[in-house]
Each structure stands twice: as C-alpha cells, then as structure tokens.
Image 1 (tube, rainbow, N blue to C red):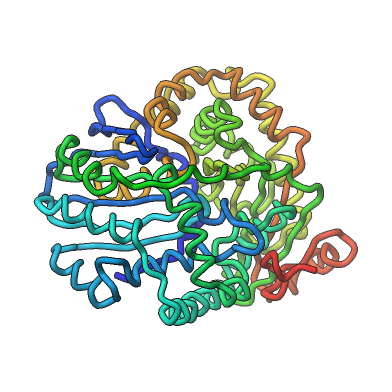
Image 2 (tube, rainbow, N blue to C red):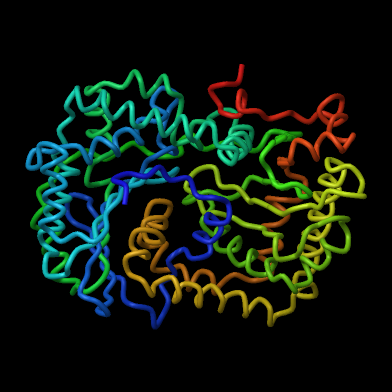
Length: 489
C-alpha cells in the first residue's frame, strides 16, 4: 500500500458516495459524536466483528479551499505529513512506528473537499493509534531537503495525471463549468506552484487549515465510544488553533452558456462515445433542503426499467443501454453539479454532436413532464421505494467499519456537518413531489448546461458532424495542451 494517494473519484464513484451519504438510519450501527472544547469533532462507529480499529483524521480543505497560487499545495502537504514529525523525525522512524503498532493498512488522500489520513490496527492499541496521529498532524516537521525530494514525487504524480486521458476529459469539463474559479476543482494544480513551495508556505497552511476547528477524528471497529473519546481527549484535547477561513466564499457561479466540448481520444473505445452533461446544483449549507430532494430524485430516475430511462431510450437514437444512463448529484459544499452521463453507439445514426443535443432536449423534456405532474409520472409507491432504497444503501455501506469511516463518513463530514448526518434520513423522508418539481424547475428548466463528448479519434474522423461542430458549430476541441485551467489563455 502506498503511503499517499491523490484522490479524484470517477463520476460513478462520486454518484455512489452521494447516494451513500451516511444516513442516520435506525437499526444501523451507532455513530456516536462528540464536540470538544477546542472545536475538534470525533465520531465512533462500533463493529465488534473482528478485533481491529481504524483511526482516521480528516480536515476540510483540498481543492475547494485553494486559490490560484496555492493550487496543488494541499497534495504536497499530504506527502510531507508522512515524512517526519517531532516524535518520528524521519521516514524510517515513521515506518518503524507503524510496524510496532501492528498496522494492517494505512494511507492518506487529498480530494476536492478534504484531506484524510488513516491507519487500521489491533483494537487493543487504540490509544497508541490516536497518539500516533496526534504527533503527525499536530507536530509535523518541514525539512527543506525532504521538501525538495517530495516535490519530485508529487511532480511525477502530476505528470501522470496530466497525461491520463480520463483526467484530461474530466478536468476540461470541470474547468469550463467554473471558469471564474477553476482551481477549486483541480487538486493537483500547476507544476509551477509545487516547484515554488517553501517550508514557510507549508507552515502557513498548517496554521490556517490544520487546526482543531477544521478537523475530525473518526474511529470505527472493535471499540467502545467512551474509550475512544477518552483517547481523543487525552491526545488532542489541548490542541490549539484559530478558526479556519470559510470554504466556498464567494460561491461558484452559475454555468456559462453554450459550453460544448469534444475530446478526440486516440485510445478510447471504438464504436461508442461518452456523453456528459452538467447543470449547476445546490451547495451545502446554502441550499440544504435541495440536497435532500436531489438525492431522492436520483433514485426515482435511475432505475434501468423505470419510465424515465425508457423514455430516453425511445426518443434518442443510438443510446447504448439504460443501465449506462445515470443522473447524479455528488453533494458538495461548493460548486455542486447535477451530472448526466451515458454512452452512444457510433454507426448509422445522425452525427454525434447533433444526437447529443437531441439527448439534452429529450432529457429536459422528460424532466419538464416530471415537474408538471410528478405523482402521475412516478406514482406514490415509487417515491416511497426511493426513500427506502436510501436507507437500505446506508445499511449496506456501514457493514465494513474501516471503509465506512475512511470513505463515506469522511465525505459527509467534509461537505456537511454532524447535524446533516444525524438528520439525513428524517429530512429525506420529508421530501415530497412538490419539492422535486420545484427542484427541477429551478435547477434544470431554462438553466445553462454543459455538454461534452469523448470519442475515439478514428470514429471522430468518420463522423463529418464532428468536424463541422468544431468548425462553425461552436464546439471546443479538448486536448492535453488546453484541458487544465492554467493552460488556457
């Protein structure tokens, strides 16, 4: 297992995380919560199946807290935290400590909304595990020589991301969605920012973001809540730090009009094209109620045998299959988006850009029908089923305490709050068809949208409509040289 991993979930993973957003479900393993005097939060999820415990420390931050001149530094800081601290002065001492604790798994990641670090170890060493992270996150040592070495590691990772076709496509899509502040969507950032990083800049980040009021300790496994809270109090209770700046202020703007993108990828699957669309969605905590309605809407529309997908398959020629049609909303603190993603067959059909516009119109037409009379469109039974499915998925997500703590729990804490977590099921249960109709009218109907196509380069050459769209049709061609925000003139 690598000591560090850059985290940018695929759309599918993002949609899954959104659907599993830690419901406070009755009958689920208890998630105990405590807020300490210094602003630190702690959560404990009990599961006594095996004698292991996962200790995770998470901070709000990552891309959503960046500026143009700090983009990429959260990722670099993540690497440096594993390098040395006042108790473990070098990488060898750090690794030796992990071995002595009997750690079975450890990692760290930097995402758009958070940075997290975790270890899994025998449950009788819970206190040692909490102490281990207290030294790492409270007392890091930024050695200039080690910083230069880690810059090389991070730059090598960034070079790989910037050459990856999936990253090129996704980053082009995200940066065009939010042209005013695109760095909030890109964790890796420009190489120049990483190269210019100094010990002083990392210390400033520590004092601003790596503070108790911006942190949570998440513990899951074979542990009693009071014992876990006592360990957190012992090793983190005297931690001091000022409150961090707000994240997502000012908020990302509405999507610009007419964004149309084509990425001719030589290595993409032949005979099929990816079609991606987006509309501006709600942000937490500004649009709290809308996030619940959004999650219920997803479950109503995403059945492969449901009315919504059947209608799209009938209206739009060449859609691949209903199982590959997805409407999603990854809940976000800043820059929330509704995504629509599917595949189209390449063959004896109208041109791909024209079919993408037909699909967009058909999608909006169906959503307008939903908004006009959602009861007639879905039926009361489908609404009840969607809410039940939210609860069922939560129960499933909590079966593995390690993955729940380091994945789902990290995510909802970073983008929401303890109140959001504990009230999620009850608030979703309150969602009615009027809320869903209102959501559609305000976020979809008449709103700007973005459309992007990813197609094999040879398939693109065989479709005259692609060249026309890139010529006089108003579509922009995406390449490795213009995909990322700092590459645009």
